[in-house]
Amino acid sequence: DTGVSQDPRHKITKRGQNVTFRCDPISEHNRLYWYRQTLGQGPEFLTYFQNEAQLEKSRLLSDRFSAERPKGSFSTLEIQRTEQGDSAMYLCASSSQGEGTDTQYFGPGTRLTVL
Amino acid sequence: GEDVEQSLFLSVREGDSSVINCTYTDSSSTYLYWYKQEPGAGLQLLTYIFSNMDMKQDQRLTVLLNKKDKHLSLRIADTQTGDSAIYFCAETRNTGFQKLVFGTGTRLLVSP
Image (tube, rainbow over all chains, first blue to last red):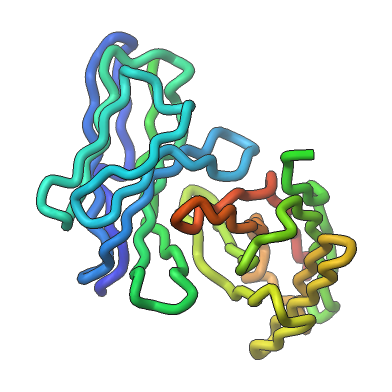
């Protein structure tokens, strides 16, 4: 299967710990996005990469959050000094700029629980 | 307002049609999307419509777009129990790339 994959699928951590999530986009998709979804809500945009360049960050992305896409392929999202309010599903999506609709395809998500 | 709005809940019987409604905010949205989310899973793309279209049909799915009222709907014909899920509409905010802005989702429950 060549869809978007995310790892891990679930992460439980204690408040104050650092966590890192990985996203592997669909092959040759040059655009990659991170979203956060809290319980009962729709996903909210966090950040966007075109190739390796991070071109936009939401104000939701505090300075405890950092995202990278070093070689324009997979991406990582790190949260430092986690807080209980960081508990959410973190979704990754990818798209191809060359495709007319630029449709975003989502991965299965990483569910983070901060105790 | 800034929010994409959807009704929270819809219950139908198996075999009936389901209609899920959405009101969006950005009149310049190029594409409007419908995604499906099953419990504990990511979002599955169902269909999308280009803003210059009024209707799009894809097998059991029919999307209607009323640009004047900024209203989008998704009709599922012959609804099955496997269609039970949360359905999200999303508009695109064109800020150099297509940023998706989602509604809060409509939970569809299909009973036998």
